[in-house]
Image (cartoon, rainbow, N blue to C red; front, side, top):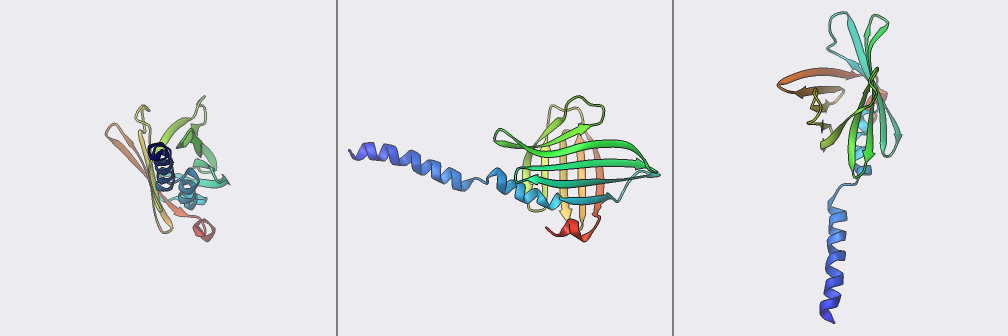
Length: 161
């Protein structure tokens, strides 16, 4: 009789310890909320400007837009999202003119940064954001290439989180 009880108790204890030992997607999204607001590009190419804006849609979705301008003309636009697919979180990038978004799996997360990867994509294969106060450095990299995007918070509202 004791063996049967033990057989039932062990899986339940393993399930409970696994549930408490892993961060939920909702907790992970909370760590991404510092992105919400407007971030102005601090290192654009000559004659250009740019920004990213991020909005919290709900506890499991952030929506963003990356814009590059030449004067008042938009020369590059990408729609960005953090979404849940299955048990994982993905950074989705949809560039104007493309038919499908490209998904980068969230592979590292801290209170001030994250890394997303898609090793099958041509470029970039890795996207990393790191925040330092009112500054954010985004780096896209892969195939021996790397590009830095430096941003500064557009207002105190962006930093309220």
